[in-house]
Image (tube, rainbow, N blue to C red; front, side, top):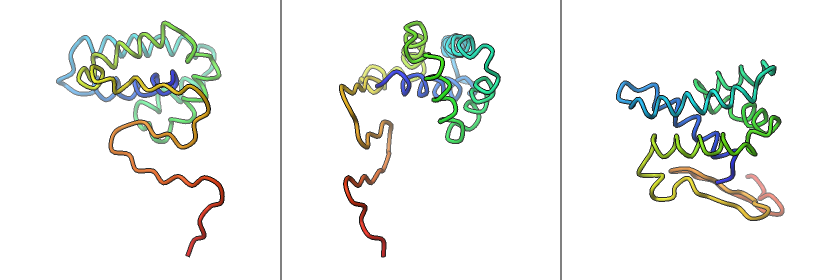
Length: 132
C-alpha cells in the first residue's frame, strides 16, 4: 500500500475503532499517537487541522483535503508516521494485517487501482463508451 493510502486507512480505522466501547487501550493509544504525529506535521496549518478533524467524522467527504495536507507536509515520507500507521493497523485489524491486507505496493504508474474490501469499479481506458 502506498504511504498516503496507508496513513489514510490507519486514521479511519483508528477513529472507527477508538469510538467503540470495546476498543482496547492499545488501539486507542496507537490512534492517539498517530493522530498526534500527523497534527505535529499540520502545525501552523489550520485548514489541515480542520480537515483531519472532519476526516474522523466523515472520511468520504474529507479524504481529498486530508490527502492533500498529508502530501503537502511530506507526512507520507515521514518514517515515524508510517510506522505508527502500520502499528495502529496491526492493533485495530490484526487479522487483516496478518494476511497482508495493508501491504499493497505499486512500482510504477497505476491506472484504476482500488484498495479495500467489497469495492466495485468500472474502468474505461481510451475512448469512453457512448451513453444511451
